[in-house]
Image (cartoon, rainbow over all chains, first blue to last red; front, side, top):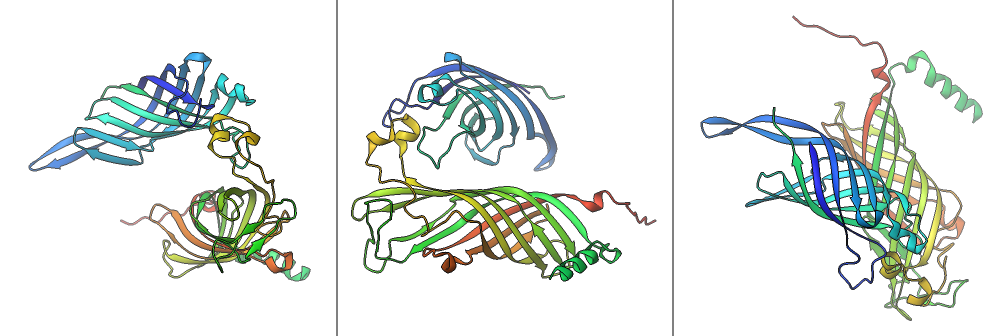
Length: 168
Length: 247
């Protein structure tokens, strides 16, 4: 599955704790997921309807943001929690990845701009069965020390992602 | 004692021990409950002018129950013989707890640790079947670096403001030799576990530090940990396999 996304990145240092949005940093993401598809027959009344379901996948994604921010991530993709409400499908805790994050904003507070990071795709909202997702993921630098008193390198990336795939 | 160890080692590697199986895997865990009690009405740290006082009479300076305040990730080696297994789990352990104090002035402290833990324990299966519930008993070796600082707060962590501007800093390491020290130590462990059909080892373990009085540590700490292990490699995978065929 090839994916393309338009996304916005908000990262530390924030302007202040009270302001909801810090500096906006728009960009795009491209990626490829090797997906493992499960096919099964759903028995609905008298006939069997074939259903194709996404089971899990391994992916590589690259994000290019304004302000020279860059994220390369390798991730395992498996939605852990699925919530179904009418017209929407909400998936929680979807992708778990490791990557390299380059963010010049970290350098403002004496952090190295290039850091290895843990990436977790926290939430996705899907409109019915369409391959279009609204998503939010967190990027947490492995160099962070929450037992210290230095700034943490954290980013939140939100956007709209479209998957391109075909059934054989 | 040396003779006993050498004889038992020879027995372990002898042909009579051929029924043994070594398995390798990994495990993750977290504290479900972490209980800390420091039963003194007043505590004056040696390296600060802040005087800790209990909130109400008899409550103690620290009387706190934390949940999910730690993470451990590590490997797992299991040697099994009949219903018994011997397990060694070298782990990286991380813990962070926030303690709030209201008297005489409000302050928050972050106390945590980064540690190498090596639980060494035996298990006994209640029934013969492979997925049986089992009992756990053993010891844990801790070698840790402790952190004890005033909580810097969100402005330092997310806005990057200097620490000194946000509040008065009362200093570090107030609870050294009260809740922790830097020397390696052992804990006792008791628990119960279950293997699921997919091969996941779920276990609940009760930990309590040993030799606290000998070391002069007055805080009483115990915790209940949830651990999930997964064994994915066995020595039987490399041995000659015998298949039985039925017509």
